[in-house]
Image (tube, rainbow, N blue to C red; front, top):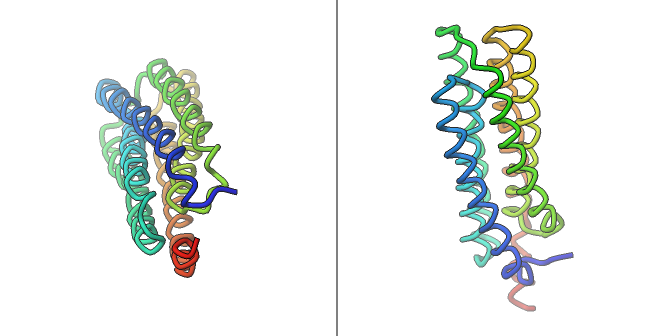
Length: 204
């Protein structure tokens, strides 16, 4: 099993690649969500931005002490809430506007985003066993994004046959719930980290 000491060099390369992939996904989804007016895509674009920030935080914090990483992990849990808030806001907007997104474009962007997230999750899977809360948080975010993309794709397919705003709204709310759960997991693990590990690392 990796330790936070032996993980640094390998993790930094992997996390840097994942951060770049998520930044690309954010730009593509933000533009697409604006053009077709999708609540779920807008929430997922915010999710990509959150993941970019998370991975940059991981990249910076891996060399810190256990106590400092614990504080950063609690901050990471707050970042995971960003797409949840974005989803709730866009859901309210869609209820009042009542205009469904263009289903084929929605589905195509969902497939593109899923490819990015599967690649990110596969890269971070190599570090999943690491005893570093920040890395686990980044992996959880990538895993949740793949689930969200499957839901967005399903919303696009449903909208083809039922041209309504509700599939997009329901998926937006589900994405929000997924991210609230992930934030809770990261926060609880950060609070459970043992400060004694810092002494053990110093002794090693």
